Amino acid sequence: MGRRSERLSRQGTLAHEAAGEGDVIQVVSRAFDILRCFEGHEARLGNLEISSRCGLPRSTVSRLTHTLTRMGQLVYLPRDQKYRIGPSAVAMSTSMMRGLQLRHLIRMRLQEVAEQLPGTVGFVIPDRFHLVYLEVGRAANAIGLSSTSGTRIAIASTAAGHAYAAALAPEFAEALLADMEREIPESAKLLRPRLDADRYSLRERGYVTVCGLWSPHINGLAVPLWSPQYQTYVVVTIGLLSNVYDEMQLHKDVAPRILELSASIRTVLEDGESALFSPRVRSGPH
Image (cartoon, rainbow, N blue to C red; front, top):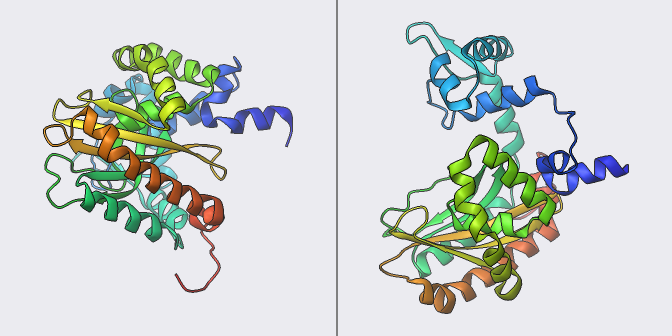
């Protein structure tokens, strides 16, 4: 791999930003921005709604939705005059997830910890200014914590996001913040002032805590893990009711379990990540 390719892959999509490169093909970037608007398979959005969410001119959105529809990534619903995710997007997603036999190992471990504490425990991966839950374990009595696989959470207001940003090399974290300040400045105002403290916590304790930032009723703790397959950080995170677990209890009672869980998941990633994220997996007992 050449130096430029290695630099691009080292911290995911932020690398070209930090290096000051301007070679991103905007039409491709904007097309993905449009697809990100459809958070659920049943979501229905018109061009005006997409334009508002993406911050793009309606004429640009109209051209892109027309192209994405012809490609099968979107479907146009004449009666509603709106779009929804199309068969090609669903097929692509399904093929990416097929055969992930090791994911159940992560799910089981998340669920076990979630029931012990109790809370919502997630395994998340970054997607621009958000993180997406790949797997979730949730206690039945975790009121107010309803994340499921596919749920998107903001980097700026969650423990998982702060842990992810704290794990990034300074130049890549700065690139992320610069993008936020340009596109979602209010989010940058949440993240930037806490970044040094988050780095210190990650360095000294191995995890990051965020209390009451996303919701006054929710406290969170998160541990970032390097993913060789994706060349970025994934995060193990837990959300708990603040009236049950205050910040002191996060450090005393929650952190040891999440650090142990993270070590277990790190082993899964290192030993079986090619199988975990590959559509073709060796057959055998699991």
